[in-house]
Image: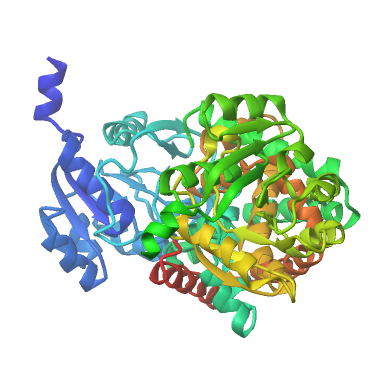
Length: 301
Length: 301
């Protein structure tokens, strides 16, 4: 009985995806592949090229560059644009959101997203911030994968008082897409993600620049002889510049705290190298291996 | 005629591999797979477990834990142990090296290797230092792959006056194993490799420790929600502790110079985040993407 009902009644009648990049197009592909998420998918992007490509790929049922028009009559709206655009987007769509609509997002920084969006959310609309921890180094509507979220986490940071039914709708969507879900405080989320994702990206972007600054012949050889260590760093560093710029600026406090901790530890490692402290170095490397092993044990590596 | 002659006469009659880890066992596997490298392969390791496993895997023709015995009568010897062991190894084998033997190594640090080994090399033995830029995060005799070096570089840093015939033997071996070769000055090698390999490893080891230091609940969540950025870092950080400890200590000057450059750049990036300098951040990320693209263009990514 439940199965039949679920197949007849997907979570959303009209689901709007605003921003059809890697994450947005993975949601639409997953919604098509697995079913049960939306009767009709409306794709909105302010980039004419991205919108045209989404239509060529047949990722949705309707296409528009106007967010206000897109959300009219929708019962689900998910912001999938870079987080720096959220405040303006929220202001633009707020007057057009239908009563009972569930508004969500996929931004990597949750405190800033809530600060930017919450003031505009009408009383009869539920706002359920979410962050799927998944990605590749590719971007744009072609980059999406129906199974991008499979086996990954999607973290929800609903403010106190958010309607439980609305939270469950967003959780159910992520579960259909193959993710596990967890609810947590936005500030806590931002610290955890600063160390596992934002700081590694800041470091990767930086070291590529450091290499690029080496003069003349050496720079060519850096590229030519790039060993495995550097290759992994450049893979991370190939991610979307505007998205990452916005993430850094919108998780400033947690990112700078984690950077300060990392800098202290890196200085200590450099000091051990300078002093020839073999035991210290070996101990630190051994700890890293243990963390790697823990990741493998819980299937996140 | 040349082909027949080459098949009848491999480069070495008796080739000794000292240290049967990832690199050593990849050389022996490649020698078997491609032919033309050695009539007989002698495997030497001071670890009884590694030696026994190499024999179980049938990686060589003879097995011994005694380096002095191993090199007797050999016309080729390649040191594949961690670079910290090279000075003692060179001292142990030097009196037993046959006239005309070619001695080589695979260490990641070339100035220290030359300082440690050169004083012991007899006048009638040629020393041809080499560094294959290849690897995985795995170690030990089981980790080797016949095609580990395919499409990679092997950098040779022969001192002035080294017999050309000896250099060509080592170059030919690496070419049979699928690598490209280049000759360069040892000091130059150490700077280039410091930025493409040694510093990325130091950073990866460090950030895993920084995460591990986060107290209590957060640490569990760091593991649980490890996003792609952190996963790549832990992959690098899973490498062999003793090997990397030795590399750091033996390329101290170049590594600390590159670390200082990186630290300056990372501080500048953190300052841009603190000040909200969006243009600076985006510019740095765009430069990283260009480096990534260059790596793909020259097939090193």
